[in-house]
Image (cartoon, rainbow, N blue to C red; front, side):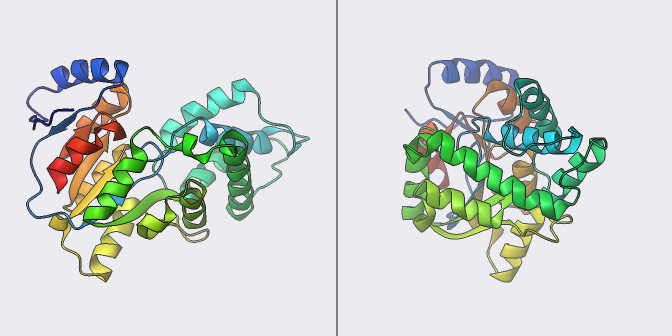
Length: 279
């Protein structure tokens, strides 16, 4: 993986074509519009799509919630069928990056028929976390390292050698902390920031990041935020930090480019080149 600094906004179409080839060949690359203005001392990580695989677990959980809202005789022991999982996959695109309360409030209002076994956000919150953890254990309980994206462990551990690292995720805070403990990375994080169970409807990643910067009097130019979603790049740009998008797919790479990240990496496998840029 030779390091070359590529101007990110010179030709997005060329980047799109090149990204497709790189991902197909399971190679790695970085495109960056600039270097950080100052030495990076604090790195914030989104989790899903940056450290953890998006392996359908969230879609299954959303499908389970939908099932609980539309079925007259909802049975918690019966998993949702493939049709509901496909529907949940499309719904997730709409609500990704929103606060947990916003996500669940949307689902409750959108799916208004049936028994509504869990008709309040609070009840859904608890069951949602239980179901997510159950699915994670079922999928990766035999080997938690399989839940990590290729290159993710190296990205986290190497960043931790050069800076303080933090989690910043749209998961509930308890859930986020549990996930990092499950994959054995929790000890590397100075702090993991997620959403509280209650009172999170007005929160956003941008507001959480802003609050951390203000509370600890951090210099935004010494902060890097690495995420795979549009809200991550928006949050980083709003706070004046160095924003890095993780593409993972061509489609997602195009979405991220539209928000003008400071850098774009093909996947966490590009951690060597990324370290060369931010440190």
